[in-house]
Length: 250
Image (cartoon, rainbow, N blue to C red; front, side):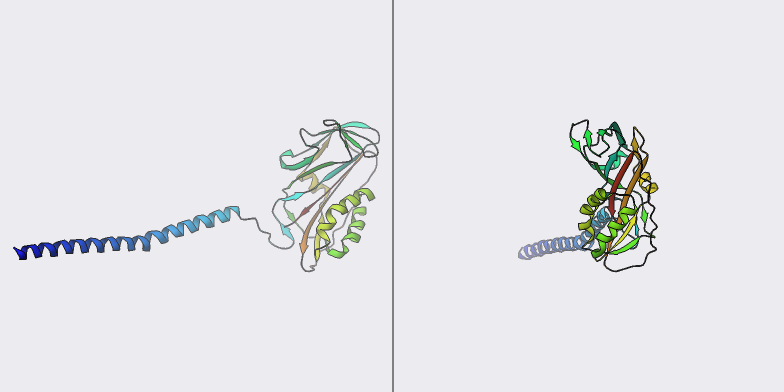
């Protein structure tokens, strides 16, 4: 009888031992196989998310293929006081505007440049919009300007590009702080054709002269050689519209 009881105890102990061994083996297999696979999957998900939200890269100091924010401001000088509607060709690109851009701007424009917004009856001196410059730029020519030489450079080039002293001063006040503290700046002025392609301007009464200045620039740590850009002075006569803005290449 005692022998039978002992045999039963031995069998029960063996069964319990085998069960424990199988449980431990199962846990080890889970840790060795499933968890690394899960970790790899999570890592891949994180990597994929990183790639999805990664900023586009620039191929060199002279190239950019990413949209960049611009800051244009528009002055209007008719030969006589007139009511005018101004539209931007691609309103979906607008990120900010003042007065608020709706279905264009409706204004009264005076020869001295003073404007009245007909929607708000506010007195203005310009129209402002900011948007996306979605055209790709390759800077194959331009100017490499030392930060400390920014004032003299802009004074000279903005005059060539057709801005008067008032307009040039407004340009300087905005862009000078962004340029002067850089060691160097690679600067190029977009052509009117390029600006018109990115954002056409439409007027209910067509101006005689439309001057559009868009400065593209990239801060540099060191001087580089680029062919100098040839600038063309536009005609400024009759009913004149002037726009200036800029875009940083990052």
